[in-house]
Length: 549
Image (spheres, rainbow, N blue to C red):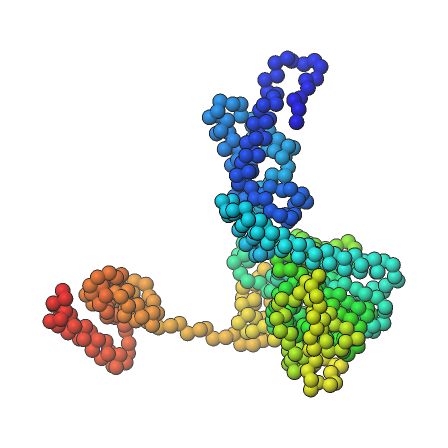
């Protein structure tokens, strides 16, 4: 940083020009503020390319820091630059000092380590080094797994470009001597109908739900998006994941012999015994020669499906979508290179295009569960070792083997189980859509998305018996009789007639049991209330009560 040289000519007394000392005061103030508040983290911070970044808390803003600078300069009788100049100098001279943005779905391990590092300023150097070393080890593992994933993607793209690889479609198993890389994941569900200019009342309603499951072939790249209507969605568990993967390999494969799979660590969907058993079943039945299943580290799972989902959602938010067919057209327009492909699981009328199977009942008796499955991130199934899975905790960890095939199971059936029927929409949901959502649909899609149900409307739920919260004849709000009785027998909590002692709420104001005025038709109920009231009066008039008073 050097002082600005004045150009030839012009006025000699330019009072608005900053001198070197004014600029140095701005730089020194921002630097000292960063030293006190910034957090220096090991490794590269997400969404920042520099490794020497100084990250200020998200609660800090440049406007707030400028006000502190202005107060300090005015108190020291120094010149204070304008806020725009303050921001420009910050951006030009200190770009490595940034204010962090609020983020979600972050790695909990990184959060804990960073919190320990930020609170270790007054601890001994040995403790500080240990905390930094722990975070560095975690980041090294994450970096190795990310490089492993990226190398698989590069290899798949190179192999697809070098060979005359067919397009996605139905091919015979193991008909092509190629290796592909596939990633799969769920996206956040959307609601139909959806409009770029959303009507106000629709914001407070719950339209028809549509789930999205994406399977991305990253060597091409292309992603098949399974659109799961609410009437065809039984769950988002492993049964659904395996059914969609089975349909993908049947209708959108390349006839590959070797496939590498990547997904996140969700144990309910991906990382469980049933997905492993299904992949072993594919190898044993000759559908693949070799399959590897790889899991990204929890909290560091951004990969290709998220990119395709982002393109899909950008177009979806700008289109008016009132049916599944409109959704398909929106997906086809989301990319110019046909990256996103849509596949309906079923339509609104109940027709099924992607059958679901009960893989749990089919695979459980034939394959053993892997113990401690959550600690492993890499699994490999090969036809050279039938029934045995090779596992590794991390990329550079030593391999371990486990026999999954049951001892009594000698012949694994080649055909999948029988399809399970679609659950359909419950009557309450059908009538809700018809009464509340139908008016927002276009005229062409009203009978498609929200038709009039053929089932009778469910009866209105019976309202619980209520009693007045005030004295008889005094009006007041009503509350359920069971709740009023429960509160009346509490510590003076109900509006009872009992005169208690000590602390409490309501008219009873005491620990005595207030008697609630409940309207009941049965004679037994009236007699029980009278007996309770008589017992209470006798307790209040007893000698023991007088002595304690």
